[in-house]
Length: 297
Image (cartoon, rainbow, N blue to C red):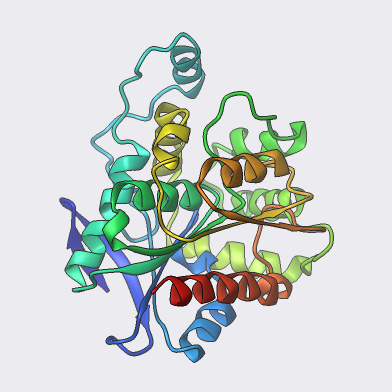
């Protein structure tokens, strides 16, 4: 299904009773809505929620901004280092406005907002910019943009930045499998055939390397967001893998320290993915978060 929101079309899926409290799921860099595991969605619906997962702009079946250039990431990083405001097609704030526009289109006033990786950055920005619409915030394997934080491992950075330029589907699938295995959770391994099936499914649904580049530019150009995150008033839980090679655990700790009264959940053995085996851990953290919301209400 598609909704017109914030001047673009957003592909979304809605599960559960339309009148139930809403949970908005926001996925990460270059990742489509399919990356939210259906067992997780179904578990939330069974708990009495309406669950919405969607494709961010420039990815999946949502609007591609192909009239906009793909900025040079190295140039953007240099500009940020010298405190210049780089020019990019959009920022994380625009992507948070997409989320608000989607809720408007669906007639949803407030939602529990869950974001993973870049989706966590968007969810944080949503909570900061739309406090009256945020019932709670769950930031998973994400960061504040603090430039002092440690960087990804060399191997993880390589699969993020050295993507194949070929259009050969088998080559791209093989790279996707290798990338998932590189950044995945050592304590929650996923069978290679399952990874391959998921990667193949997503690539056949949509391939958008230019969108990936523009989303990466949005992250870099948005820079350090700690001042905005300090405004967040919604009950918040920060869930982060202790073994994340792409966004190290220090980023989760920084996020929890920045957002007032946030609870930090560190998960041993978790890397930078959401395998089915981790769903009970995420659900337990969410249940605890919602209990805080109910008490506050």
